[in-house]
Image (cartoon, rainbow, N blue to C red; front, side, top):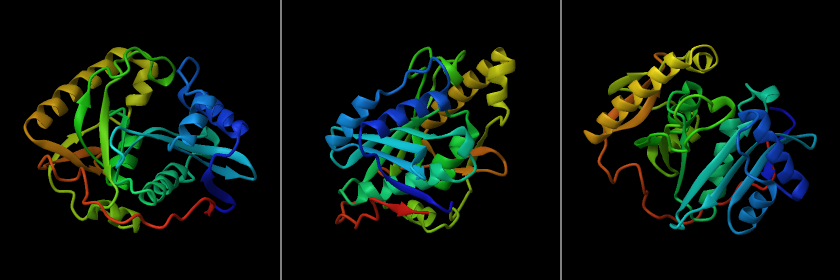
Amino acid sequence: MTGIVLRDLDGMAEFLAAERLQSEVWGPGDKVDPGDLMMVIAAEGGLAAGAFREGHMLGYVFGFPTSDPCIQHSHRLATHPDARGLGLGLALKWYQRDWCRARGILQVRWTFDPLRHVNAGLNIGRLGGTARTYYPDYYGAMLGINHGVPSDRLLVEWALDTQAVARRAAGLAASSLSGLRVPLDPGYARLLETDLPAALALRLALRDTLITRFAQGYAITGFDASACAYVLTSLPRDEGLRPRPAAAMPFLGPNLPL
C-alpha cells in the first residue's frame, strides 16, 4: 500500500467525498450519512477518517460516541470498488483501534450482515471481534445491494485490549478455532442478484440457527475462512465485552503512512 496515508478527515470537501463514496459502495437508493452530519459528529468526539492516495479518498471509517464514554459505535466502513484487495478496510479498523485507545475508549461496536462471508472474515476472523446479539430485520426494507431480503444484522463487540485482539494486531492468527461451526454460503451475494427466494431461505435459516445458539449461551468467537464458517463457543456474558480500564495509549496518527 505504498503512497497511502490514513488520517482524520479535514474540511467539508472530504466529508462530502465520504458521502459520495457511500453511494458507490452500497449502491443507488441506499440512504447515505450526510457529509455535514458526519462533520458535526466528528467535531463532537466522533471518528471520521480516510485512506488517501495523492489526495484521493479510497476508503473511510465513521464512528460516533455512545452513552458509555468507553464505547464507540462504528457506523460505516467503506472501500472504493477500485481499491478492493489493498487491505484498506483492515488498515482503517486498526487506525480506529489506535484512535480509540488514545482516548480511553475500550470497545467498539458495529453491525454487519451475518451472511456476507467477506465481512465476517474481517470482523471476526481478522479483527478478533465477537458476536452474541442478533437483530432480525434491523433496518427494515433497504435498497441498493441489500434490496430484497430482511436486513438482519449481527452486533460485533470489539474489546480493544483483549488477548485475541492483541494477537490479531500483531499479525498473529487466532490461538484456537475449536468450537461449534455454523457454515455460510459463499454464493449469497450472487443469489441476491439471481435468486431472491434462495437468498431469503439462507437468511431465515441462519437467523434461526444463531438466535437459538445465542439463547443457549454460545457466542461467535472465530471465523474459519477455509470452511467459510463461524466458530461458536460458550462464552460468559462478561467475557470479551468490557476489558479492564487502562491508561490511554499513545495515538499513532494523525498521518499514518502505509
